[in-house]
Length: 141
Image 1 (spheres, rainbow, N blue to C red):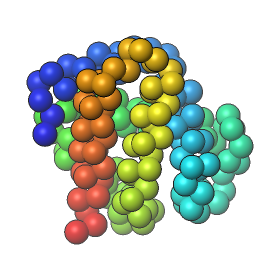
Image 2: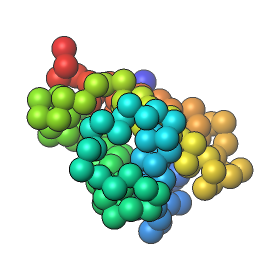
Image 3: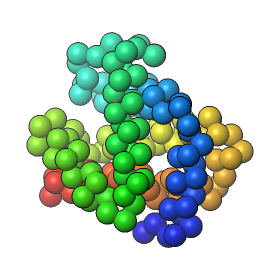
């Protein structure tokens, strides 16, 4: 459960990304494809090389969806309902992949934010991403 302090830290951290969202999303995806090669199977039509237009475009979508979730921290299920349906029913993405992306996003944030990615921020982002993954996996039950 996200505490008021967690929510504040998540919003502050997200605010520090200013303008780098596409790059952060692309880097997180690229890390995921390399750390967890089976995730590539969901993107057979993508150029999976670092910085490709497809990875950048999808990274931008991922980060935009997370930004929307951050604006709706008190109602993640509603904020992510459409994405949950898409990933469960149309794309049939194995829910474990949401955890993989979460890990890769956290590594990306840590490398970009350095000391600003404190243990407290890490904990808050981890809880947030776990909540997002849980919501995205809701439709699988």
